[in-house]
Length: 125
Image (tube, one colour):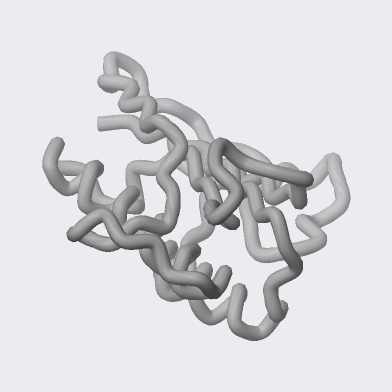
């Protein structure tokens, strides 16, 4: 279940303050997903890397019979600024109008110099 409690200000972006794990649920913890495509290639632009990272999260969850609806927490790290409108389009497509608890941060570097995006997700089944 996802919700925004009444005793705090509403979210300042497209996310939910709180995700509640159902009793007796399996917890799925994904390693940070980078922007590789199915062949292991990493595009140069940050938007395509983010699209690929979201797709990788979706594919991994799908392999366990879980949809993005099962995500309870997601962390997004970027090494360069992303256009807000392009980000929102990708983000909204990913969560389909029901965003999970989310952290997004800009960092100076990730594991390799050409990696501009990493997305970590936790889900419940």
